[in-house]
Image (cartoon, rainbow, N blue to C red; front, side):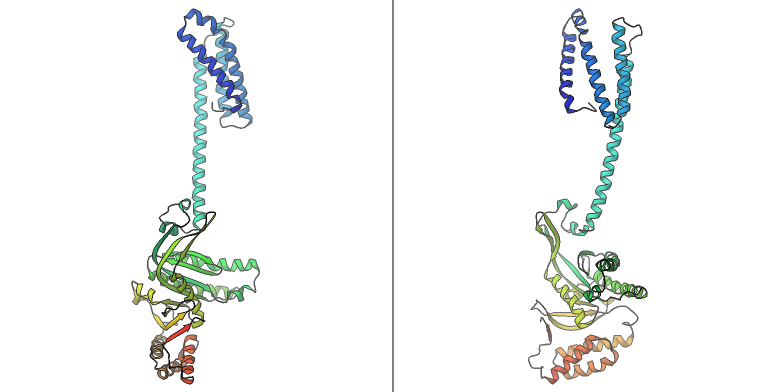
Length: 421
């Protein structure tokens, strides 16, 4: 039965039936009677040996597991059966060897079964390794954290419409003017450039308890579920790593890059969208849209990192970070007013006492501007231009204050920069 084939099943069933008849005859008839008919069982037995031998030879041809071992045990058993038949009919005088042949046959079967079980175990072990590798590969497309928040342990459990709500901090990081940079590269160089950039972005996100939800071209959207502090620490480390990266790029003759980072905190809805044959994990929330808008505004204000009051209010240790107020704004697609701030980088330039004092004066001037004290705001911004000569935000607010004075824009001014156009 170890090498049983469908085409021989009928022959085997016939053999089973005839054998059963002879066994019943042996049990329920007198010895004299079944002794007479036992001679007719010899052709059946020899036929069974021939058929079995044929099946085993086919098993060897098809390289079945343990074929040679099983065939050896069967030949010994068959030889013992033939010997005992000849001896019983006094054709030869050797003795009865079937018990020994049976032992050899059972031993060969045991050996083959052991081989099969061993092969099966190795196969299962290989399948487990492949499954682990597959799961690891899948986790590179669908973050494990995403599955965890949906209370799923395996991607096969994901269903269309699965969703949950959680408070998280969203970080958008995008390369500025990437289109201009990419136009000078071949498609292959573009992919190499992007992947080289992302290979250090990902680890920094993970080191600070975040995970990348998706890549949007050269942009990265990351989620920080544990605390807003993690997001700000990650942003600072991204800026620090960018400085090192640009230094290496410059030595190799490649263009330096600049990134803008937008951060916001709020309630997110994580879930699956799409249709039955094509699913995608995504995050839907107004908090996500705001983070994306802030990232766009970093270029407008000429700063590296912008964040909302929502994130600042969510910080566990706000005193650890330094901020500069950019005032109140209305962003594209939103009617609500946002109070936004710049995250000051922890480097040798931004931590100089002169720069820190200049930032404090900047915030005071922004407040004057919001309070309609335009003349005072203009004077402070005018003074700061000499100190913060490369600061785009200072120049922008200075020009805004002059424009308001010259065009009498003070009337109707609510202190909110409307950036919705």
